[in-house]
Image (cartoon, rainbow, N blue to C red):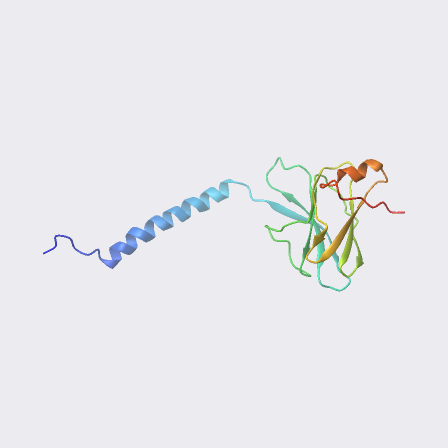
Length: 154
């Protein structure tokens, strides 16, 4: 006859549930220690066809976050989620002076003197063109990818 008995179900549940609850509690407290990012919506512009809202925002993750401005396309009226992915991001507080040139085309101004972290050509099927905020030749070299050209308003 076997010297070992089966572990009662209540004991098994206690031995697995209690450590899981303790680990979850520790993770919850640790997450509170580190600052979460705060998103501040700066402007919103609806597409002419109503398919998207262009939202310009800044993201602050702690006290030493440098100024930044980003933009994303969201569903009309949607709030900006914490994990939103931007298609353009610059290292300055700026106004992109956005305008829809068509239902599926968008134009944004990029500041000449700011670091450009990201500037995608298309997002969600919408073509994006960038123009320089100032009419300076140096602005064309400020794009994240050198192959991109800046458009200057006439």
